[in-house]
Image (cartoon, rainbow, N blue to C red; front, top):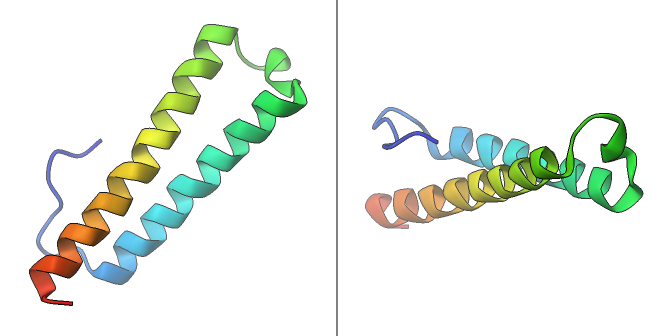
Length: 73
């Protein structure tokens, strides 16, 4: 995860990155519930991917909130 958001990053770009992070989190959640993960990952790898993708989605959600406050929205 990036430590800081570049000042030049626009709010629409942050929304796109958040949507991508959410889609990736949904993909891994679907792998977990369907059992298909067993073809691609060990249980520890899947757990790490689930944690990572949820963390990235949460990161971009927080970044959007911070950007909105900074922009006065």
